[in-house]
Image (cartoon, rainbow, N blue to C red; front, top):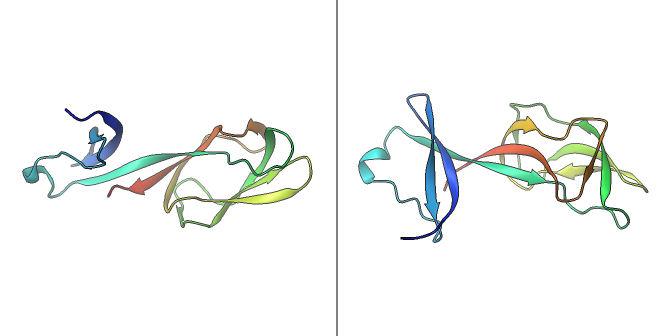
Length: 121
């Protein structure tokens, strides 16, 4: 049996459940369950290493709201490092589901800062 690397959150008749994805990246769901089901992944967006010095940044403000559709490369967050104020771009396309890092807080590089819902492939 293939090792499960991640799980996909699926919606079926407004019920949510986790669906396993195996190590080959395929979804082993039976053919009769494909119709009428919408699956998506919750991408855990981690603070990228944008600063040449220091391991922490200050979250200044979110440029998008929870529930907004965002595109890959879109500026979604404003941060401040020890040298500059800059924008952080989304690495994926989807819908912003949660701000984990709140405005006016300090977070470390690699810390989860947001959850973004992306389509399952």
